[in-house]
Length: 419
Image (cartoon, rainbow, N blue to C red; front, side):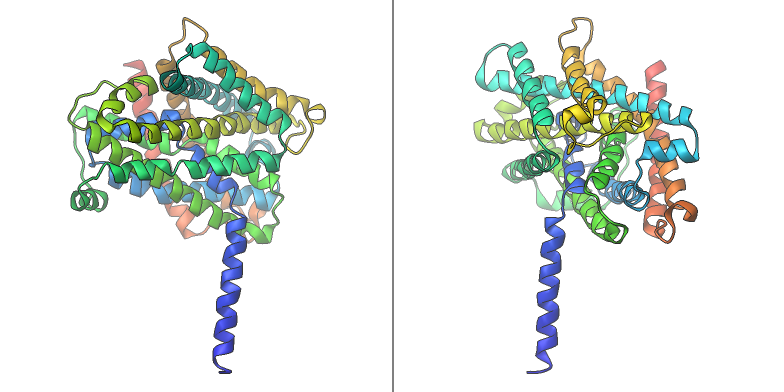
């Protein structure tokens, strides 16, 4: 009996510790869910529809890259107590900071416009009424949440929305994919040289690794006011969030492959995807798809706008944070809500095509993410900044790999832009 007591105590302590770690889930989990925004859902579904299961192994490879990059961003924020813009200004160049934030803001606003359009399109298909009405309602609801909700309130809403995205896993199961082929294509790499396959791979990886996720998670780790000793908890949060993000993306690709591969469907946005998917999936599966789009939009838009607001506020030294009242952080909230309003306004401009807006936002992201990875890598390996909390071997290996991949992505995107 005496020998068993310490074991029982250790088990009890482990259970309590894991419960506490689960309670601490927040920035990483929200960041992971936000990566699967409506624009991303379209991208992943199109990847499945055009390439089948053949790119699932790439998604598996991108998971440790995402974990490494987001771990670096989170640890930098916790250890230094500063954001990426503040650190780049202090240790590198203010001009570099302004460039990064300007590119981030433009790309985020273009993506916000595409995501609001996606929400309005889904509501229009489900309930009727003109799209413009839904545009205004969606914009008002999200802006109201930001202005009148505290950080804790917004965090709870976003975590629940992240959980709702699990409907895509249900959709993938309902699609009844061939399990043996699914496993083979997940773990056995294959590369096709057709241009459609290459473009789909670039789109998928470019959607998976997004600059705004680094800014958002770093800012939210500071908002949580974690101490240096809680850096390992941030690692756990990040791992869970990134695995969840790519598990959802995996399910979207599988669903697109089972239902649409070989149909040569011309999918350009959420509306055409919905019109194509509904007859193939059936009403029940389409209802799950629509629920996921709505949850993804209401989750991603605040994250996109918030990462912009944090970055701009930190660049110019403004007070920031959702626990501040609007009157105490006017500039922060002006950028936060302004990004949403300008994004919504894109949909009202007759001369702006939403698909083009999304494309150019991906081009800008492709230009920015290698710069951010390189800066995060240099900072996180600098003992003068990080002390004993410099990056480990895992982060360094996969961050370098991510840098190489994103440089290649940027080159191809820019080449496509000018060709």
